[in-house]
Length: 494
Image 1: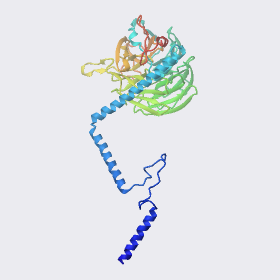
Image 2 (image 1 turned 180 degrees about the vertical axis):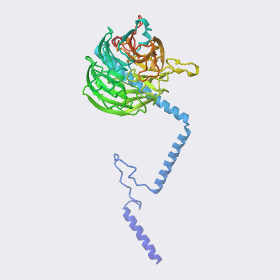
Image 3 (image 1 turned 135 degrees about the vertical axis):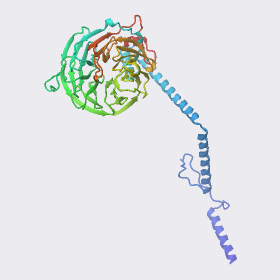
């Protein structure tokens, strides 16, 4: 039986040798070599158990080494590494931007049309800034022209794009078109009594806001009766009536270069209209309190001040989104854009703030900008009731009932607000507007605040005040857009 077992084992060994083939000495035949360009996938390779365990151990060692490296980096070291990475990204971005600007200069230099186009491009980017504040002389109070015509406090005003006309409105519902050069009243649209809306051409309630299109064709006015009236600016003929707001209309602005009209209301909404087509477009919501002011420029967006919700908001119309900014401690009552990237606002805590779209907090903030009123422990800051900015410049104006209009200079990067001078004016400054050229400033003055009757300044005159702004003799015109411009473009910008 043992012999039979040995014979069986020998036969099996012979079969194995024959299966291995001749000339191999009993060893397995090697696998054929792969072509050099064949792609080898780790997912498709068969591994022996020992090789698999070795590879798993190697992976665990690598993971442990990575964990040790992460533990060894302290939070401060990580912050430093990330900061260096961020600075490097900024450096590359600035180099690319500088190269783009050099290419723009090369393309536009020496071509007046091209230079004007470049100015438009910089304005769109919010980088056009005329440095005019240091050139402005303190106005002589005797040179201020006073226009009388409204029976009640002036609440709002606008200047025509060519600086030839002023439109003003008041709490008596009246609207007046003035000629700047002569001071004459060209048209008067009287206000009507409450309940006569059907047969009266104009407003029958306090007019709180107005706007004029950038081509001077349309004038829009809004009142406490929730109505928006659209007029032909040249003839003061009423064209349309927009209804839809559920409370007083407190802000109006046309998008520059279009007839798209934005409106804001105490109902906390912003609405979009088309004045040329007499059409409603859409409604936007977000504010938690009454909206007190609104402004816009060329971009399809607008900015609003939200009263006691303490926010300034930028509404991006196409994206249906909004940016929210915080900074004032009181009710934010007025706002205006300086350029496409910066804006100025005023509040009833007496503060004035300058904002940039890239930062949610003010770039510059001046508290008690117009001083305080009252005695000792009862002292309260004068409310800031109006703000204005000379477009694409460093010059800002603010108004209150402190007895003066203040002019301010925006510092470099809009990070500082420096007082320039006080212009004596008695009464509530309810509206301020710079002319397009910056040659004069117009103030709407009333005995009461435009939004209420908290105080009354009896000695004030309900009037329009035209304040001339003269430049210092020999002061050079200067324009800055993040860097020096060619002299030809500086001259053209002015």
